[in-house]
Length: 518
Ligand code: PMP
Image 1 (cartoon, rainbow, N blue to C red):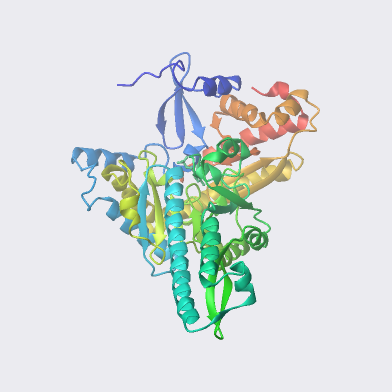
Image 2 (image 1 turned 90 degrees about the vertical axis):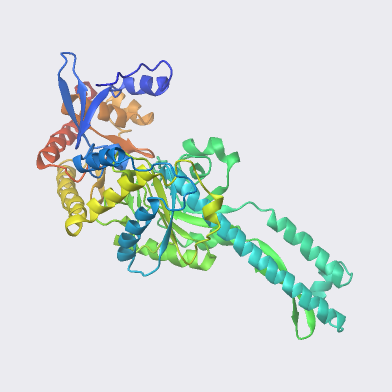
């Protein structure tokens, strides 16, 4: 039985209309490995090489037989799927599997507590919520300390201690209780300050109300600014700016202390920032790996500020880079790790946040829940996926690295042959970006115009699909970068197919002849 594919009458009409302009709206009817099939007019199935790879969710390709068999088995076994408030769920199995892998890669004995959601953006928001709970605890701790100091000072005043000149000015010339009132008033004002997040320029962390404010792309973020906490963005090549931003946003809580028998006021830094969220390889920015130097700087900055470092491994994690965590290769030492996409093996939908035990707030378990979060089916599919990654001494990681290196060599060779067309080839493992120079100076008015409207990648995508049966798109925030994220079963034939296809595009761009676009 094959279900029919509907018309855009009630959904996606605008998207389909837009994609149709470039011949990119396609009714795929079947998917297997790296191939998507649509039906030609004569009724035959046409296979397309899928380099878009679910934008990173298809490490094992479409419908991997082992994953499908496991999923069917789970259903045939009547495995409990929804067992809210049972306590023991299959999510515990997944948490244990993930701990084994993550602790090995981070070379730590620390435990990571897992918290489950349904999508990447949701998992990012769970991470941010947990970090905000941590910030609240830090603020409460500071307030308690200050309250204790006020009591000590009150006793000292009762024994005859005087106010310093600065403290007297604070009290507007009044006494100790006036000082306390002023300190309380000022601290209440500071306490009203909304929290801020830190992230990198160009980063992408989702499109939900909170997570979209961590996503740098203005087109996605700006219209929804008023809905959630704001982010200060740091350029990835200028980590020294973190300290400047921290200074700019500095807020003070006032403390009352007794020094040498005199009551003084003292400034304490108010915890303004909630978390620093980064992708070890920036996906939507155009496949940009972070440097080891930046990884070190981020760790130091987070230690100084006292905020958790959150590694968003949603796209680059799960082995795609050649290691389970892409951050491992640059020595990134995160406090939280966020995974989603490939965790579901291409058939389940889930996201997870792994939180270092030293920062974990156990109350959070009851505070944040979701009907579908930690469901039995997704959890056990994900367990299977992690086991498949780890099987045969991590053969999947080796394949990602080896196949990726071969694909990259193909792209580098094209770059060498078309230096005026290809700007850069970037990435790690099977997360590669093929960047084309901006074509604003092309002699072809069509190419120039398309570049201006950020539509050239759609034209190229349509050409590659129709003429070469290769499905590939640019990243969300870099129109010039084609994203190559196929499964680890990438074959030599598929690499050769992309080689021919990319060379054809480069030749058209070099000849500045848009008439040859199919
Ligand atoms: N973070 C990163 C790094 C991503 O690449 C994405 C998706 N492109 C997300 C978060 C959001 O994930 P989802 O689409 O599942 O909400």
